[in-house]
Image (cartoon, rainbow, N blue to C red; front, side):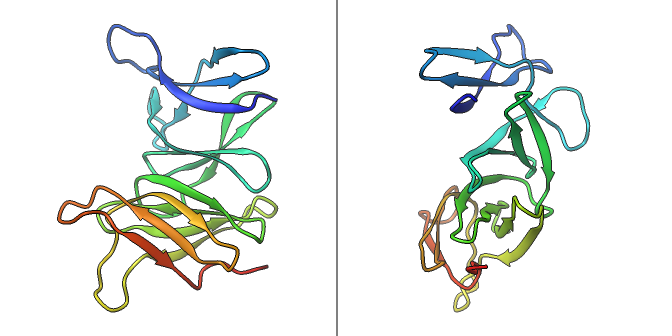
Length: 179
């Protein structure tokens, strides 16, 4: 099993259908291996889409997401991404955190439509936990690129790319259960 996953642009003179391929690196082998594929488009088009996030999930597997908002899990036997699904209607899915309950939590969305979802690797259940929004002001994050989950279930989400202000750190409560 290889230890690290990432993405690179294949060396092409011009952009093309295999421009966004995945690669893997294992420190014991000391070399990068370029794969012949990337993340497929949810629309089934030719070529690969931009990866948006990489995360080692609560089950030890590598999870990836596309800028189309689709969640994938790498199959270590075939080095191919397995599509899990799309947690909502949003594009972008770049932030992940592991919950104390064995679930993977993520933030998807952009342009102030960011939401929190959970995925249970044991059952395959994906739940939309709703939008991130300040109850007092109505403000919403533009997009979340990083998040962490504390043992008490509090999610801290780092906003980026807000067009009208410096990005905020959001505190999200009441989403994570111990079950």
